[in-house]
Every structure is written in structure tokens, then in C-alpha cells.
Image 1 (cartoon, helix red, strand yellow):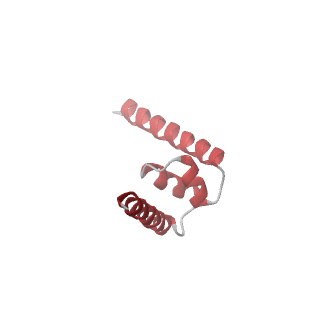
Image 2 (cartoon, helix red, strand yellow):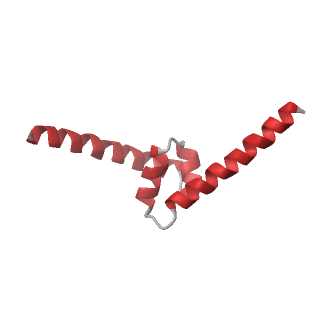
Image 3 (cartoon, helix red, strand yellow):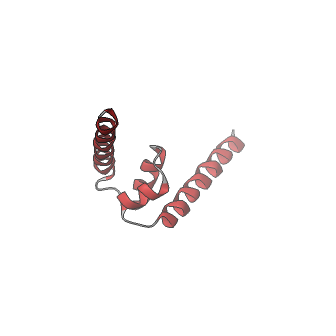
Length: 80
């Protein structure tokens, strides 16, 4: 019985997590949606499902965001 209760609790938590994620990304461009959900720690498959794209697209976008962030940080240090 305890396992069933835990399983139901986990399923309910998953629904709440998805609803919060959807409210966070509503009205934003796909790139920003992916960035927000990635920063929240979601995996690429879950992000893809929420955003309505493929896991490959999410992987590419997260990689590009990471490169831009790293490049921007180096650029600022070089200017100081």
C-alpha cells in the first residue's frame, strides 16, 4: 500500500512540475523556452516534449546557448 501511495504522489508531483514549466514558458520564443527549462534542470527529452520539438533540436540549442555564454564571459574578461 505504501508503494502505491508513493507512486501516486510521484505522479501528482510530475503533473505539478509540468504545469509549472508550461506556465513559465508560455508566450516565450522557443529559444528562451529551452534556455529556461534547461536552466531548471530538465532533461532534453522532457524539454522537447514541453516545447513541441525534438530532443535533437533541444540538444543543439542548449549547446549553442552554452557556447554563447562561454564566449561572452571570455569577451568581457578580455576587455577589463
